[in-house]
Length: 478
Ligand code: DSN
Image (cartoon, rainbow, N blue to C red; front, side):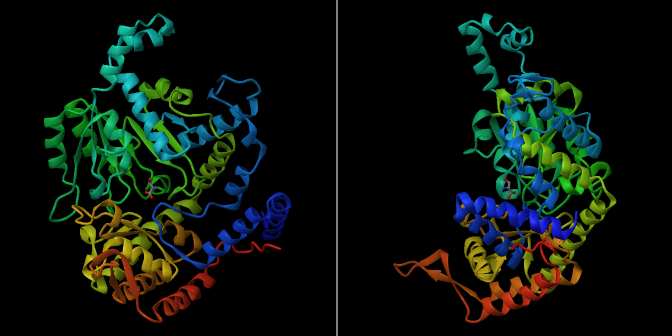
């Protein structure tokens, strides 16, 4: 697609929007301008292609399609069937998965579908036998009570939030920590690395039904063969949440034992992070779980977003190219450059480095909380998110870390030298930020004072790099 086509398509679309609600058209223009002008380092964000973005803006948005391909609760789903089948087919091929479910609206939804399907598949219950025989109406009150008891009494073991796991991996306040009896595994207190022997010991003692692997803020690769061995030893289902690194799997950077798909019973993901598709989720599964995952909508999810499933198909088509594989490799190479840039300037990184797409910077040596660091960086046009570090003394709200990822700026074309400069700029901001005080004069975990002139000099250096690597080059809005 040529630049002029994209420019005129978006310019005209914004005119149509402006004719109804000009403030939304204006906010949309401003969002592009802001994204173009900032260093986006949020590890879970990216820039989808114009083809992916445009696919989401169509009349597929208007169609209800609860159910699954060829088995809908609404008439007139023939084109949605085409879209969903194609997206699932691309996903199966891309990841080498026996089965793909492309309906989840987000990663959390995908995880809920996975939990549902594991419970439905593994828990012995009269409800399930009758449901499978399509005799749900025959369930007695006692059957339902048994089901509630059995579903509610299962165990899940996942990585703790402060070690890098996700809220849905059994964090107590999250629904996953309430629907299961849960325990969490952490990382080695000295190295910050996963200790497979410790995970195995915990699994042997706790005997979970579900062992969850995968992470949102762990800067290292995981050996999924070892995780599967642990799951098999204790009779657990291995569920892997690869939301953060799906692009590195699709791009064949994570292969062999670092590719979760052949080892996990169920793999979940988002489609918009390193995979660079539309916002959404997906479940990949071994055949034994397929029928239950397929009941995700309407058992767990609302109606599928057909326009987003269409965009997933487009994104998966992009991800099967050699260009995408090159992109995925550059994500990992750039993360190393970023990490080295910090280490040579004396900053502390959780685990001492990275071998995936993210680094976790411990900002306590700058005398700051994660919240203060995140805010000061934003003042200088560097967009990050604060994040807990293992055993974080500042908890999950203020935190002691900042998580930084390379997928988005790698899409813009940043390379080794630019990521080294990004580390330099971040260290400049943090070294010149002081923790503030509360109104009462005590130490504050939120307020901060950024030194004079720092934001200006960092923004200027960033702009030089951003101008060299424009976002959506050729897209000019009239
Ligand atoms: N919000 C995603 C992330 O930033 O990692 C996960 O929920």
